[in-house]
Image 1 (cartoon, rainbow, N blue to C red):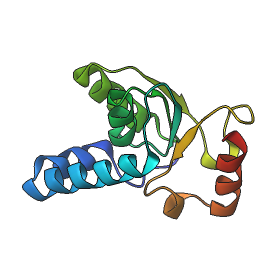
Image 2 (tube, rainbow, N blue to C red; image 1 turned 30 degrees about the vertical axis):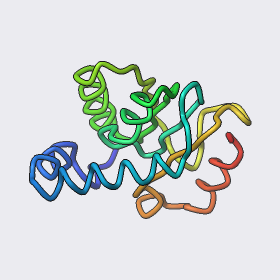
Image 3 (cartoon, one colour; image 1 turned 30 degrees about the horizontal axis):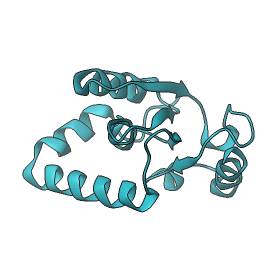
Amino acid sequence: MTEPVVAAQTYARWRATTLGKITERVETSVVLDLAGPLRGKRVLDVGTGDGTYAIEAAERGAIVTALDLEQEMLDAAHARAVSRGVEVTLQQGRAEQLPFEDASFDVVIAVTVLCFVPDAQRAVREMARIL
């Protein structure tokens, strides 16, 4: 594995700042409001990082799977989900080769991930496939 592009503690430090708190709250609200009602829906968060969107989706009643290439990020997402009292299924994998069956999700979230993916077009095709 290569070094992570952004370390989990970088997100945590940002989130601890006033601007980070405000930005995360606004961004998360906007993205998930655009996704519509999530209760009971199967949601995949591609490039979950430390789980911000996955956790919020779970709090809104979604059945959430969070995927990331880096185990460090999945560990951070797990710790945050536990601390918030929600269940999120964590899966290590690549956006370009999603390890899921066709049509296995109702909603896919992919925020700030395509800029880190070597083949963004393939990743988008994969996301469309699993929807």
